[in-house]
Length: 432
Image (cartoon, rainbow, N blue to C red; front, top):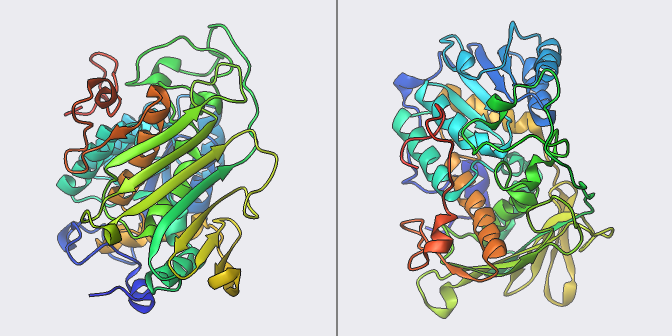
């Protein structure tokens, strides 16, 4: 049955009738009108913002905050009026009064923390990208399904009324068949310089911060934000800002699962410093469909972290190319629908809302339904970032098996779908 704009908006664009179930009625968090008690894991910019938003909502109580940085967790405790501020997340996970947790840690903690939270019976809101590598993403999906927990990924676009309207138009054939989607991450970053190993600052439990990742010495240009650019802890800007656009691109393209090939080029072109990931990407992802000419789809990712200009009228956004027109979308701005010869047919506002996305998470947890940005959606989007990074690190194309989530006949590339963990650490997920 064709998904029309009306049915798409009515159902929330949920994947299909056979979508995997989350919490059953018997596993719901109390009643739909009862208070939800939450914990915040990671009290940096995103954690503080989400925690403050939750603390201001009716029917929600922030019971505790967690961060290995003492100053951060004490600030978050004050802002959210939490009763406890702890360094070790296990203190929150062991608290039976906590129904759900928000995970806003560095990327290397997203998967391990989310899996532990599901196993502790908590529902989870985890920041994007949901995983540090492909294998962790699959283990997160399995943990959520096994424990029947709701896991919402922080891809707020999925709860944006304006973006949902634009994607519904694509579903309804407004540009004909969408054959190609482009995801653009164009912005100007700053160099981080070079630094030698040094002692961590007072108040930071650096060993706890590193967690299950391989231990490496602290250096002053690692925190508070630049961990994004280090292989051990981050996923580069393709997994930082770019994953938003990648998620919208595959959503609007209407593809399911993973691509079968990632090809292109990625390298450092602007920054000569300790930044380990590319600052520039041009990666294409091929979705073969049923193998026929009409079944193929292409997703293209562009990134320029040195760019002082806007492309297509925005910093970050998407373009959808159809057989009868195109749609240009900026997740934080507006969208424009064009017909033949660039005739403007319709336009609207997009915009993101933490509040709307948090409400969807809380409602899903209470009702035992799938959230707008379910962990499987987040896994498929994050995998695109991970494959793009593999292309960048190896300097060549890779073929990906969507079913096994492995890169066959290429041991070097396949090894990068996983990671090395610290021996014996309590947070290393089973099955890695």
